[in-house]
Every structure is written in C-alpha cells, then in structure tokens.
Image: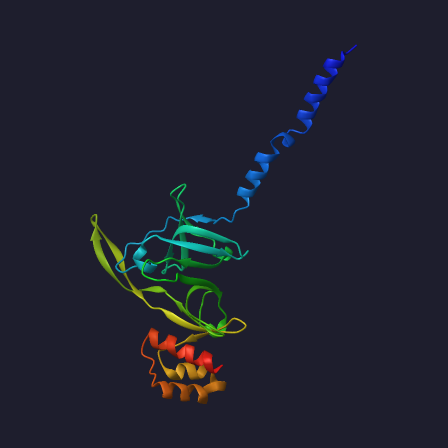
Length: 242
C-alpha cells in the first residue's frame, strides 16, 4: 500500500513533468517578446572592389539609420551603408561585426542620419516599370521632394573607364567609377517617369496635359533648370499647379 505522503509526492512529480512550462511562464513570455522584435536579414557581404572613385553613398562612412520593412515594422538605430554601385543596403551587425547585404525584397525604405542635416536622408525601394527607362526591377531612390507628386534620385555609380595597373608582378584592370544619378518623377498610382535631362522640355513631356500652365509658371519664376536644385524647385511648382 502506498502511503498518503508518497501519493502527494508522486502527484507533484507528475505535474512538473507534464506541465514544465507553467513553472517558467514569466521568463517564457519575456523571451517570446524579444523574438518578435523586427530584425534585418540577408547574406554575409564579402564584396570588395579596387577602383578609383567611391562606390558608397557619403564616401563609405558607416552611419546610423532606420530600416522600414515591408511588414511596416521598423528596425531602428543600425549601422548602415548604401552601396551605390551595387544598389544594395549594407548593414554592420554590432553583435557579430559581420557585414550583411540586406535582403532588398524585405525593405520598404531606409533612412540615414546626417550630422549636418535636420532631417534624415530617405531612400525608398521603388518597383520600376517600362515607362521609367530602368532595366532593373527595383531600385533604392532618394526622396528629394514629396507631395502629390514626388521627385526621386537614383544615386547610381557606374564604371566610366578602366586602366591596367601593375601589382605583384601582374597586370590588373582598375576601373574608374563615376557618379551618374538618374532622376524620376513619381505620379499617383506609383507611375514612374525618368527625367531624361535638366530641361523644361523634359518636364513638359511628362505633364503634357498641363504644359501651358507649367510653362507660364516657369516663365513667371524665371526658372531655368540647370541642376538638381532647379529641378526640385520646378517639381514643387508643378505640384502646386496639379
């Protein structure tokens, strides 16, 4: 016959073996919360390039920034770079000190904090269509103006030329990189159009239904489009008209 005290002991052992999680419910819920924090993911980044010219935005310095995921969750205060040659976002993990090429399909936009600017620089992952003149499915585009229409810049870098250099007794090709940004107008409905050159005529073609009003506004403002700042001003005027 089993004594009552032994029966009590057996019940306690049985309860612990069957329901061990209930004894750690407070710690378990805390770990679940941590596991659901938004995280960055991608491939370990081993790409390096010997070249003249810079293949990173802002001369390659690591900057603090936030990454907004397609899930609308935000990963905050990470060390990131934007490789303008590859059009890829690179993240430096402060836990492993590994560089990671962030999976572009998971990124909605990212921001880079700059000490000399009140507002961060914003790059949005834009799906391109045939009207944009781009041969890539998506690009990271910098927001230059945001209204009912937007002006975006693709800060792309391309190989302008190459030259042979001697190193270690053998010849190597050394590419020279050149910044060749492209500018895009984004209309409602995510319609993307390339601004082919700094000219008023290029904008007239994109907004052909408002051509006369836009021409009059440019004339009143004595606006000639010679550079990026002129283009930003022109788009803001067009946005007022629309």
